[in-house]
Length: 61
Image (tube, rainbow, N blue to C red):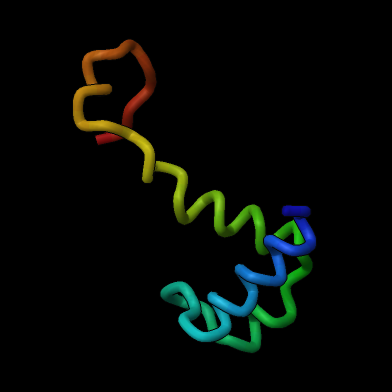
């Protein structure tokens, strides 16, 4: 899947259900790079396991 195809799918998803603080029109007007960056930010911590907290790193509590 290309970035353009992914952006098209994400745009349709976020237009139907925009993130908190945004409107469908704002999502519609975003360029592809901004849309992909927003999606990465919204799902940044989805893959973190609870057991990873003993691994050395930077955490904000």
